[in-house]
Each structure stands twice: as structure tokens, then as C-alpha cells.
Length: 108
Image (tube, rainbow, N blue to C red):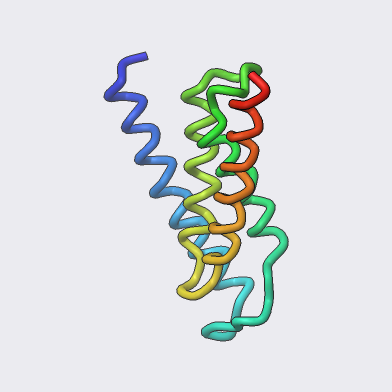
């Protein structure tokens, strides 16, 4: 595939993920911000998204551009949540993905 088409797919995946994340979070959260709750679904989505994005070279079952596209979509879904929600989930997902990447680089 042409690189410009792949980049366009990445951008569309990000924008669609942000919109879906905002819509879902407004349905789920009625309060402006609750600081004590950790959303386990958003945490799982964030971990899976970061793993697919950062560790796309280690995943050989699917083409790299597909895993990056899905990863960007999942990260944007959590990133696009209502203001104040999803920030801890994104950081934890990023840290877990970096740890998996480091382990994968050491073992390979």
C-alpha cells in the first residue's frame, strides 16, 4: 500500500476513536469528574491499544499497519473520553506496553 494512504487510515482511525470515546464517556459518566474511580474497561482498552501500537513489530500474526491502526483507534477511544477521565488508564497502558517491549527486545 502507498504510504500516504496508510497515514490517512491512521488519521481517520484516530479521529473516529476520539469521537466514539467522547460519545461513550458522556453516556457512561453523568458527573463532570470523579477522581477516585479507575475504569477497568478503559484500562484494558488502553493496554491493548498501546501494546498493538508500540509492539507492532513483535506481532507477526497480522500486518503491521493493521495492528497500528487498531492500536491508534483504541488509544484514541480512551484519550477522547470526557475531560478528566482516562488519563491514568493511558499512562498505565503506556508503561505496561513499554515493559513488554523491553522484555521482547531483551529476549529476542
